[in-house]
Image 1 (tube, each protein chain N blue to C red):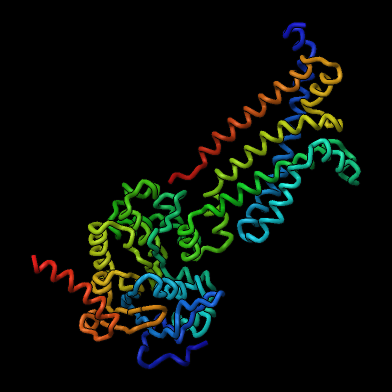
Image 2 (spheres, rainbow over the protein chains, first blue to last red):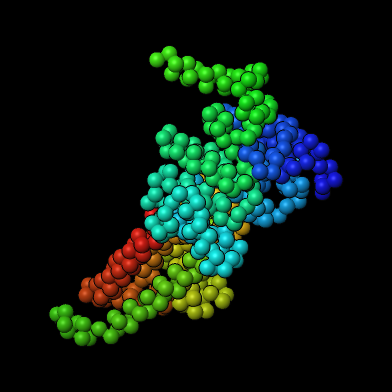
Length: 262
Length: 211
C-alpha cells in the first residue's frame, strides 16, 4: 500500500514507523508520534525506562497491537495489510520470561513453527539440532529435556533458538537477558554478539540497560514517556547533549569513576 | 439373613443395578463434558459471559434433585423416557464444576506462554488446542472428578422416576424398612465413587504439566 512512498534516506528500511501513535482505549497515550526506520541487517536497540513505550513499539511490529494512528511498515507494507499470522511467522520473537511451552520438550518447543509450517519431519529434526548447537547447547543432552529442567540461561538460549527456527529475517527481543543473573547475562550477551555477526538478521532489542544497548546496538533509539528522543550510533550516544541520553551516560560514567576511585 | 445368603439372593440384581448406574453416570459425564468444556472455554474468553453462564449453572445446582426431576417430567421429549430425564437432570448438576474448572484452567495459563504463542504466529485455534487445553487438562480433569463423584451419588435418585440404578435398592429398602437392602444400594454406590475418584485423580496427576 505504501510501496511508492518509501523514504529516500532509509531506502533499505525493513521496519518503519511513520508518525505512530498508540493510545489505550481508556485514553492513556503509550506512544506519541514515533517515527524511525530499522535498516536491513542492523541491530536497533530501543532504550528507555519502564513505561517508556519500548515494548509497545515492539508489539506494533509483529501486530500484537495495531497503531491507533500512523503506520508501521514491515518490508514496505503496512502491518495492517499483512495477515497477522504470516507476519508473525516472518518475525522471530523472544521475551524475557521466555514463554517456553512447559508441556513440550526443548525439541518440540523449537520445532513448533516448522511443524506448523508443514516442514518434512527429517528437516524439522535436523533444524532443531542445528539451532540448539548454534545457541551453545549440546543437542544430544538437551533435545528431550523439558523447560523446567533447565537453568534460566539455558531456557533463554532455547527461547532464542525457537525464535530462529523458521529462519525469520527479523528478530524481536523484549528484555531477552533481563531475568538472568549478571554473570550469566554477560555470558549470553557475549554469545549473542557472536551469533548476531554470523546470522546477519535484522534485530530489534528492547532494554533498559545502557551498557547492553552500547554493546549490542548498531544504533540506539532512545525513548522516554512514549516519545522517541533520538537515534544514535553508540559513539554518538556517549557524547550526546540530549538531556535524557546524557543522564544514561552519566550513570555509566559514575560506575567507571567508582572503579577508578578505588 | 447373613451376607452370603443375601448376596446369593440379590447378587445378580446388584450387578444389574450397578451396570445401569454406571451407564447413567457415564452418559451424564460424556454429555456434561461435551457441553461444559466449550462453555468453560467461552467463559475464559469472554469474561462478561462468566456471570450468566456460571450463574445459571449455580442455580441448577441449588435445585433439589428430586424437584428437578419433577420439573423436567412434563417437558415433551425429555419426560418420555426415564433414563433421558435422569441424564438431563444429572448433567445440569455436573456442569458447574466442569465449566468452572475449564475456565480456571485456561485463565491460569501463564500469560508469557500465551504471549509467546501469539507472537510466534500460532492461530487462536492452535493456541487453544496445542497450548491452553493441554496446559489446563489437569484442572479440567479435577472438575470432571468432582462432577463424577457427585453424579454417582445423585444418580441414586434416578430410581424415583424408574430409571434404575443402585437407587432401586435404597428406595426399596426405605419402603420396606430393610437396612440390608439400603446398604446393597449404598455400598456399591460408595465403592463406585471411590473408584472413580481414585482413577481420575491418578489421571489428573499424570497429565499435570511439570513446572
